[in-house]
Length: 513
Image 1: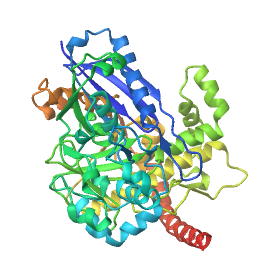
Image 2: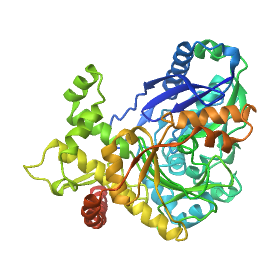
Image 3: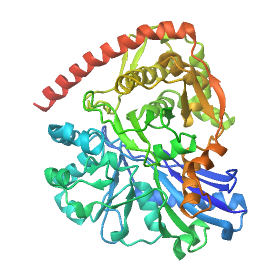
Image 4: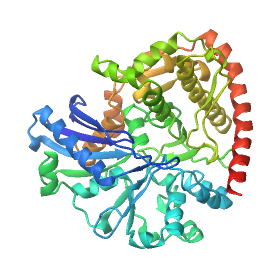
């Protein structure tokens, strides 16, 4: 029996898992990772802290597995996609990792928006809290640091590069990430010299583009000691966490609706053609792991983060008690919210605490509308779940207009939020589609592990390996009563969103002046 390892470097959690060649989970280990938010709008992480937590998870996973390291044939990493870091010529971080939750690049989003349709046509999506505006901010506001930046990196690439002891010239990125660069030709999977020249970004600072299954290095002697993997174990490039999650959930064909209920709340559809959204400027077109399948993706910046924030700020005593009792704190909140009727008795939540991404409305912030003294904590919690679902409803309408020939029968949901039957029911009722969970609860980390095996030849056919390993399990049907209620709230949510956005734009403009 041979084994493969996948490592998922999420925004708030890191997980390492070992699978055998039949796709069976052998062992896993995970840990929370700090996210530093010292001021409103700031969100940073330490790349070396991410590295240390990842290696610790890998070692704990192998200790639990009790598997001969000689039988482990490869490891691959996936990670958060829209944030960006930078390293110097010694492959050391120049500054903290600039998270996708960090909003300080907002003015540079507006600068890039002068050429938004060109960026969308070439790179697949509009500028947002993504690589392009972040790079422009560093260039304009931190010129001395910018000079020291040899290559821009995402966390999964940084960890893989350090464990493989790569030279800075060998730093890479795979093509599932590059739509967030705003600097590529996504149909050709190359950096676009015209866009780089337009925004004054040196192409030599951009990493080489590879395929997700390419072997990019081997575990070094030092990394062997810290991870437990044998020196020389192949490191496969891996991919972005959403691409890995889709693979791990069995999304290997076109025309599948996919919901990733993680730190970001993501709704996507797989398609067989490249069709950038220049009308609404809402969807990002990106490659799945398979170069012949695209996905149109929209997401809420920190949609799932809203739930963690609510848990920590408004239910911290219950959170601690629940953990002592071995209960998921979110289950406590879900049970409370179940007793609240659909529509949360008139409380409507705008989920864009860090600005709206799809479409780009960086000045927008969170709002609770319509509450009074009769509303409880449970109403507010349920309104968060519903607000994210209403936003999904907007995305789905755009998707249906762009791809009118596609008929959806159901949605596939993964991520931590997929464990909430209440939330699945809310989203199913808002979208008016059945929601399926799959048997692979490992998600992205399983997708990465399969990529690792495919990259070294353990798995001969990527699609067939996934198809044999993934199947539907639980089904959540839409509730007819809820559908009637939510059909009214969806329209009100959009009207409220439009008016609130105008107010926030005016507020920020007046504050600056």
